[in-house]
Length: 91
Picture (cartoon, rainbow, N blue to C red):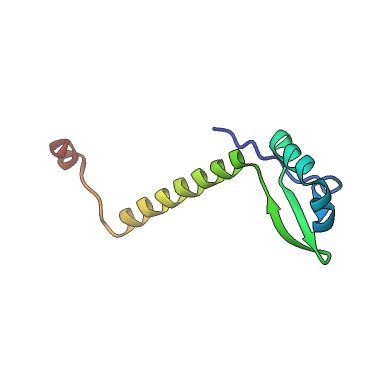
């Protein structure tokens, strides 16, 4: 699966909270169509990042995959492995 989320476009994908409130429906539509995250600012500072549900699901899957790989590498480092012969017997 290829990551759909695109990089932030500074001129289009950063918006104040008050501007977001006025254009929420339009902004949500754009996020889903462009797959660009939207940074919402409050008092001039980044307060939130809004992404589409599809992009959120993809990022969640990526995190789970990376965690599984880390657990596997930790198992190997700690010697928690099963030789091929034993695995064949188990299967």
